[in-house]
Amino acid sequence: MKNIERRKFIGSVVSVFGMLSLEGSGSGNSLMKINEQDTAGRTIRLKGKPDSRIIHYDIITIGNLSRNRYWGESDATGVRSAICTCSIITGKDFHLIIDPSLADETAMTTELNRRTGLTPDKIDAVFITHQHGDHIAGLKHFQNAKWFAGAEVASEINKSGRYTNKFEPAGMSLLGAIDVIHTPGHTPGHHSLRFDYRGLSIVIAGDSIATKDFWDEKEAYYNVMDAGESKRSMQMIDSVADIIVPGHDNSFFNL
Image 1 (cartoon, rainbow, N blue to C red):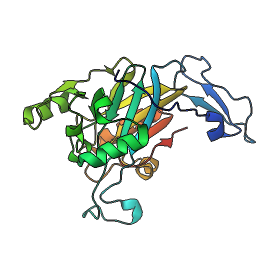
Image 2 (image 1 turned 180 degrees about the horizontal axis):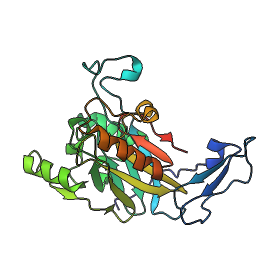
Image 3 (image 1 turned 120 degrees about the vertical axis):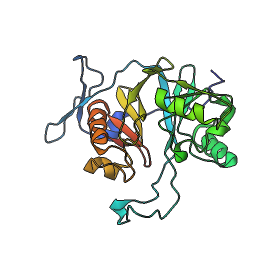
């Protein structure tokens, strides 16, 4: 790994959930537990595992949509430039950036450093959820990294001849620590990433989930290619995610 020297994240699920009881699900092993319960006696069962090679994750840019029906805007016309949510996952021996979002090199470098203390040359790998332009806008700034995408997306971008670097198909796992999951609907070859962090299951969903509002209504964005597939992908994400990082919004809990 390229000289990982950054602040340690010290978080507490207790501070977020307050007086709730949290227990692991899945095989029946308790992953994390808080003995206090709220007045309703609710128990939150986490989907993640306590053992993980992931040290930390960050959001580099919080995305926005070009038009948002939940803000009273028409699907027919864009009213602003779209920026995707760009994230980074730090493992024991890698830094992986997902959907680099900023076309301007200075802006991408500044935001990466502001959020993580890193520079583009410290990034070991890039993953693209799908090939839409707002999700590859900053790709060219990471020439020294390995580039990954789902097989269909990797093949399509490589055949385009747009870049000197070639994408490698990600397969079902990435860097020995991250699950690559097929989440079609927005595009046929769309893939998301899932990983465990401090007992939580995190899904970086790309545009399979546009924003929290679209998630709450289980609706796809206006340019979805297959609405039925999109709903099935959201159902699958719902079954595995404690925290969701959508394609054009801040992260949110799914408990």
